[in-house]
Each structure stands twice: as structure tokens, then as C-alpha cells.
Image 1 (cartoon, rainbow over the protein chains, first blue to last red):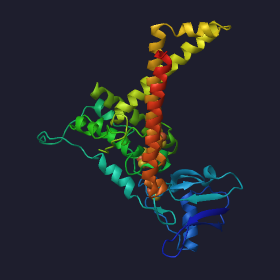
Image 2 (image 1 turned 180 degrees about the horizontal axis):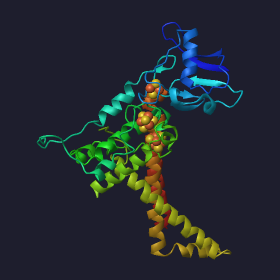
Image 3 (image 1 turned 60 degrees about the horizontal axis):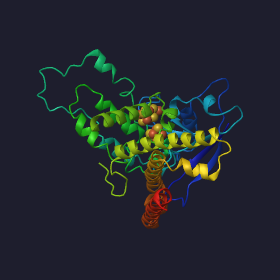
Length: 235
Length: 122
Ligand code: SF4
Ligand code: SF4
Ligand code: FES
């Protein structure tokens, strides 16, 4: 199978280029895209990408596979490429490339940091732990599972244009995760920090984020909930 | 919190609500005009003028004009802060953005004065 891979080494290359590599795939087995990358790296150790868990848990191998963002380790070659087609691997869009498929995630993490991704509760801690009813706990389903792979935010036009001002789908999903947590007491303060024209309201509801989340999460719905909470608080 | 001085209400929530409310006004005005035309297929110019003689029609038209100007300004401001930025165009981004925003403000005010003149002028 022909694999076209984005190559860029800022130390030696003046500009990025696509490199075509022919890879022999074993018969009768549907490999994951990450397996193909590993085979390529065995032959050419200079290929750079991130990976760790190889089972869709760590979120480190988010990349653009034939035009769609996804995790290489859980994307079967058969679902990414039509029979006889070419596998095209590019880094996630909108973030600076460090080398080949490795991008600089700083802007993404800065937005995550901005929404204060931790429980805020100034009440004296109870002896054992802060309890939550099963119903309240259920409200966090579909939110806490995010692995911060950045597939969604780097597929979002609003994040491409303003990655320093728009929190992006991943950050907003987590913002709602703490807004929805019955144990968190900073709801009003959190909302007031999201009310400006950029942080939340740059979302245009295109749902590019929902289309690619490898965990099947729905940032657009969470953003809608944040908007309603803002509206409720203000009126 | 991200601050900004040139957005309509300086608050994302306010702009968002204005955008929605003005959209509803624009849609109802479109329906109103369309139904007037459909119900009176051979309307003459004097009859058309008569429609705008009533205070309620003039008021509705002015409201729609205000809605379209607010709606348009928020949209144009959003476009300018998406594309006419230093990130997208380098150093000249800021100059272009401010120029574009001033042009939009100028046009908005011009249309407002012009519209009021059409509705209530002689
Ligand atoms: S729905 Fe919003 S956050 Fe998701 S991709 Fe579209 S603009 Fe971005
Ligand atoms: S919401 Fe989904 S796509 Fe976005 S960072 Fe989390 S797991 Fe990845
Ligand atoms: S290697 Fe961990 S998510 Fe793919």
C-alpha cells in the first residue's frame, strides 16, 4: 500500500513536503494506522510521531488521516482508505509543527488551563470525601471521558483563526464538566470568565468537533449548555 | 477573560442574544413584506406608498432597519476578528481590521440616517 506522509524537520528542511512510501502489508489482516507507522519507522527511524498506549486511552497519537482527524492506534486502515487507495498522514491542523506528525500543543493546553480544570470548593473538606448522588454523578457522563487528544479543537475553524482567544471544543467540554459538577462551588465565577465575545461565543455550531471525537463525545452540546447557563445567570 | 473594545455589546452573550432577536425581527419583516406583495399582486406605486403611510408599518420598518444594522455589524465584526488578524495576515492585519471596522461603522450610520430619511423625510 502507498503511504503519503508529511515530513518536516525544521533543522534541515526549508519547507514541509509529502513523502510517498510503499509499505508491504501482511495479507488478511486489518492493521491499525499506528501499526503501519511503526512498520515505516522500523525502516526509517527518522519519522517522528507521538504514541504511547496504542489502545485509544492516552490521546497522544491524534493526527489527520486521509483528511479526518483521529487516533492512529484505533483507526483501522480499512476504514481510512478505500481499497487500492493511498493512506495520507498529516499532523493535526492549526498547531505549529515541531517535526513530521508531532505538533506543539502549547496553545491547546493553555486554553485547557484557562478554564481551571479542577474542582473548586472552599467549604471545609469532610472527613472522608465529598459525596455526590448517583444522579449528580450521571451528569458528568459524556464529559469526563475526554482524553485531550486535540482531534476536535484542531478540526474547528474557530480554533484555527483564534487559538489564543477561543477556548475550543475540548476546553469547553471540560469547562462544562466542572460547571455541571454538584461538588464545585465556583459556578458563577467560571461563567463570568466565559462571557466575553471569544471564549465560548466564537463557536459557530458547525459540529466539526463532534464529527471527529474518537471517544464519541459531543462538545457542541456542552457548549449549548454553557450558553444556556450564561443566559440564565444574566437574565 | 478575553477583553475586546470594538465588539457590539462587549459581551459575547449580549451580542449572541442581539444576533438571535434581530434574526427573528428580520424573518418576520420578510414574511410581512412578502405576504403584502402576494396578497396584492397588482399593487400600484401609490398603493405601495399607502402601506407605508401607517405608523405601525413605518415603526416596523425602522425596527427592522435597526435589527439589520446590529445583525450586520456583529457579523462583520466577527468576520474581521476571524480573518483580518495579525495571525492570518501578519503586521498589516491590525491596520486592515481597524480600517474594515471603520468602513462598516460608517456604512452602518449612513444606512441608518438614509433609512430614517426615506421613512420620515419629505
Ligand atoms: S461546533 Fe463549535 S467548537 Fe465544535 S467545531 Fe464547530 S465551531 Fe468548533
Ligand atoms: S473531546 Fe474528544 S476529540 Fe476532543 S480532546 Fe476530548 S477526546 Fe479528543
Ligand atoms: S497511542 Fe494512546 S491513544 Fe493512540
